[in-house]
Image (cartoon, rainbow, N blue to C red; front, side, top):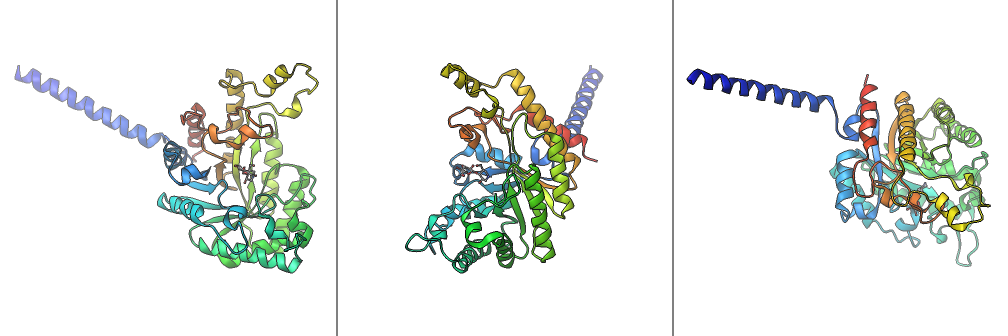
Length: 380
Ligand code: 9MR
């Protein structure tokens, strides 16, 4: 009897040991989160909003802390929020954002120093409402950039210095910065940022970044900055893409062109819309309801066919980033869950889109596991 008991106990012990060994091996072998999965490849990040920054959206915070090792502020570091009135800076939200990133040891990105949009009107005008002189605008840029970048010196690791200054055809956007300072506003912005924190990485950031004309001008711009000894580390590819634009081939060409100019690339605002582009739908559908349904087809959930297409696009983009992982520094999602994505309101207001990796109920979408697996396959 004693022997039987001992044998039974030893079998139990052996199976317990082997079970815990299997579990150990499994957890070593298969990472469960994006940041573990991609840790040998590039940073994975998310843009975070005020609810996350102030810990009001605890479920989003949990996702950010578990899944990502890089953050960027979705809005609170834009100039209209940081310096709403001349000389009056507001840093409460940005300070919290940086503290959150530091607490979690994240690669923190500042977005963005110079952008025509979400800039306060006073920045470009005098008391009479007329454009300020080039000299005044330079001083204002210098003061803004120096104040903001020095405050976070050594804490913010990379800055989107200039955002969206070049058009798809390669011409310069006719913004107030351009109108008053000409092309020179870009080198100046990079120079001021570098002077304020010589160790921070500096990026140019743009959308539709695969358009031929834009690629050509940005490549020239990078070469020009470099030839003048002005620091630029990276090209920020916003990657606001859809199910059928751009092609992976044209996107790859752009990555190669930018990196040949001597910088790294990052996908800085990745989201993949699952909805039809309005340009693709014939606006002469007579029935308004039918037209609206066609524009906004998945109000109560993405269809299986659309999900399959959408997942394939995510796999294709991540395969491309992994293929060029020597060139890619970071891949950042523009938001955390679908519910907060700007894509629900762009290019048409009030649609139900599904562009991100976490759903409206804060659940991890099945694609995440597939992406992690893909990263694992490309580990060596
Ligand atoms: O996601 C941001 C949204 O909440 C703001 O209303 C919008 C204002 O223009 O900016 C959005 O973020 C943009 C980013 O700063 C720059 N690239 C395009 C992003 C989406 O519009």
